[in-house]
Amino acid sequence: MSDGIINDTIIAASNLSKSYNHKPALRGLDLAVPRGSICGFLGRNGAGKTTTLKLLLGMLRPDAGEIRLFGEPVDAEKSAIAARRRTAFVSEDKELYPFMNVGQTIRFTRPFFPAWRRDLEEKHLRLFRLPLEKPVRQLSKGMRTQLMLLLAISRGAELLIMDEPTSGLDPVMTEEILQALADLAATSGATMFLASHQLTEVEQICDRVCLIDEGQIVIDGLLDDLKSQYRRILLVFDGEPPATLADLPGVDNIRRRGRTASLLAHEDVDALLERTRGLGPRSVEVRPVSLKELFLEHVKGE
Amino acid sequence: MDLRINFASGVPIYVQLMEQIKHAVETGAIRKGEQLPTIRRIAEDLAMNPNTVARAYRELETEGIIEVRHGSGAYVAVLPGSAAKSAVMRRAADVLRPAIEKALAAGVSEPELRRIFESELARVNDGKPATRGRT
Image (tube, rainbow over all chains, first blue to last red; front, side, top):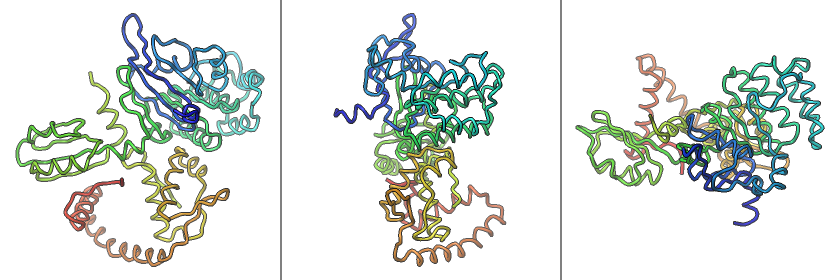
């Protein structure tokens, strides 16, 4: 790898493993988030999302594997501190003092960061309509998230790690937060890593998605590329769909119901289509695949 | 230009953007030489990813639909024949509209109508089923 590639990968984790009481939470997880991307980090509860976030934030150490932020290993003390200065964590209610009000929280945080941007602070105070005099403990969940986002943006963080930034928020607040993220991405080129259960927000704001299941990454790529690659092929036969369908090269997954069969494929879809036509279906239909379908097809059920 | 993106759809978002901008050019909603909204403006208005908007603009530039001028933004390219094209598009829409209205009045639903249209289009093309998107 050239230096350029290393420097342009803001989060690089390789072969991360972590167990709790001999129960593996992460099993050889690899992650690469390029500069300037907004990466949605998806997975079911218990898939390893929280463990991954804690490792990235230095709150846990991996049993094996390595994490680099901004090209530097995070277990070296000096570079870890530098990386943390450039990284902000945004979650609904951690890291804020409940007894301070909004104005005090901002004035308290400001001096820690020499690159503080007063213009961005004021812009987001207006945008989010945050009440300066209100104590943090009395803020709604959405306002606490907005306050954390304001702090992260104003201090000039280059990497935002976010945990469920819009869960439980009403549509207006959700849209305000997503707009602030879109604006930040367009103007500053900050990198964002966003753990979420909200597929709709990930579809809207992320250009990249990583899907974790059972401690490993099962899908990783540009969302639009995934949508271009994956296809569902719906086949209707005169009788039972032939058993040989499942053996065709390129079939990721197959479901049968009565005389119909539904194939999921992402490699060489045209060649696969030709082969399915050879099996004499009455009708062949090709459909695009949404992120929701991809998610459901790639995480293991109960 | 009224952009509407269906984020939940399986159609790539940059492809949806490209198609809507092309449609706006073809119908004359934006004309050659006119400026398109900035990437930042679209990203903020739709609360979507600016890299994705940039990708749509890059592809449109490659196809010769728009010109990106450094520092001043993106403009609809001055293409020979694009006025003729928009006239053809308008005539085609005039031909299709009464047929669509008739089908809807006869109780055909919108998704059914779309399916009929796609399959008839595929039949006219070469009998292959329609594949959405591009390579």
